[in-house]
Structure formats: C-alpha cells, structure tokens
Length: 92
Image (cartoon, rainbow, N blue to C red):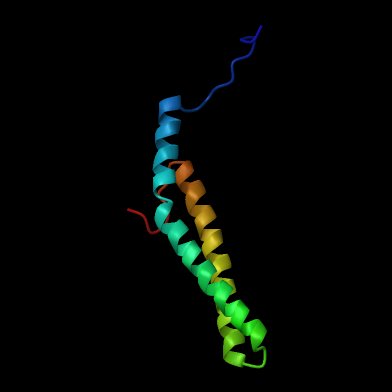
C-alpha cells in the first residue's frame, strides 16, 4: 500500500547529499563574517546607548546594523543558490 503512488525525487540521494555537503562546507567564511559583524554591531550599539548625543556613534551603529542586515540577506541567498546547485555570487 505504501507504493501506490511514487513521487519523483528529482535527484538521487547521493547527488542531494553531495550538493548539501558542498553548500554546508562553503558556509564557514560567511558564518565568520556574520559573527564578526554581529560583534561589531553589538559593541557599537552598546556604546551608542551610553552616548546618544554623539552623532558619529549613531552613524556607525546605523551602518553596522544595515550592513549586518545586508550580509544576512546575501548569506541566505547564497546558501539557497548553493543548495540548488547554482554558483553563489563571489564563488568560483
């Protein structure tokens, strides 16, 4: 009864595993970049909260938060591109 309808898989299991493993291995650089930007953002926002009258701190905190958001969007796009077997931007 379990084989009444067979759904196509699209890829053999080994191909899926290979694509997924490669995508996972390629995450290290992006993860490290995201972690570092998060650390910078955390410190800037903490400093900014202490001194909201300092315009430069506000500008730096705003930049860091915006850049972190951009990095996260790019990270997600690159991950899913790799998952689907496409070459992410900036990769060779």
